Image (cartoon, rainbow, N blue to C red; front, side, top):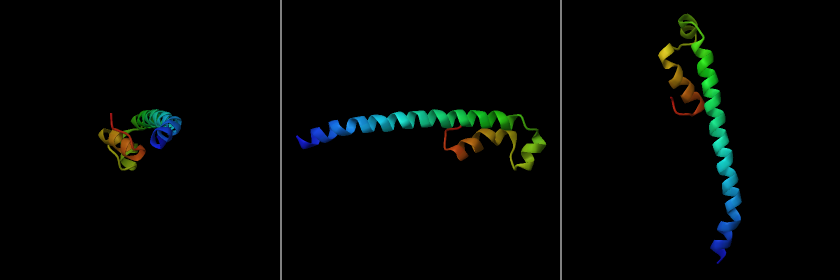
Length: 70
């Protein structure tokens, strides 16, 4: 019976963590989108100065933010 009570009591906490994780993921995806857009506005020379190629942008941004490259 104690296990059932503990599980019921921790349910709101787990739900709250899930919501925070969900919105955190959305926030990181939006940030990745903004950074991708900003980097794509740079010239190839400016990207080279940063040590990047245009085709590397998505992968590098995803690595830095810890999201999947799209």
